Image 1 (cartoon, rainbow, N blue to C red):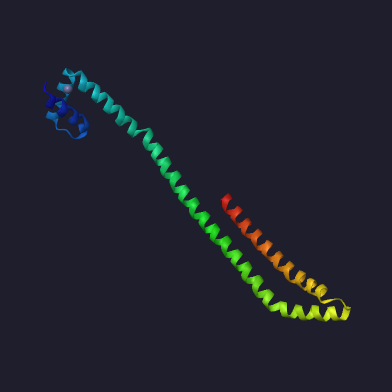
Image 2 (image 1 turned 135 degrees about the horizontal axis):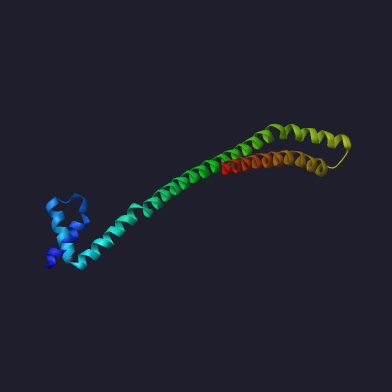
Length: 156
Ligand SMILES: [Zn+2]
């Protein structure tokens, strides 16, 4: 047996499904005579069996896991965008309401301070309290809602 014959036999082992009858007979004859190529064929068929069973199952699991990870990532992005939107709306809402009500409240507190005869710093502190507390409450509520939404999505 020459080296070329062994190489040819190993090539045929790899292509065993597409060999001609004559080639299969020649290969079988060579495998009967040659222990080295017989070992090679056994090793090759083990690899083929292994490829046809577990790794493919593992591959489809990997594909599913990857798809889930991609979907999860997309959900997280959407969630983050929704939360940013809520925070943005909270800022806009607080800004608008403060801009609309602050001048009126300022005048109201100035008038009440005058009536009560308290110093400017007292009614100004009261004004600040009445302006800041609703804004803070609105921010906390909207932020809590944003967090609540994200928790709901994680459960799905
Ligand atoms: Zn051989």
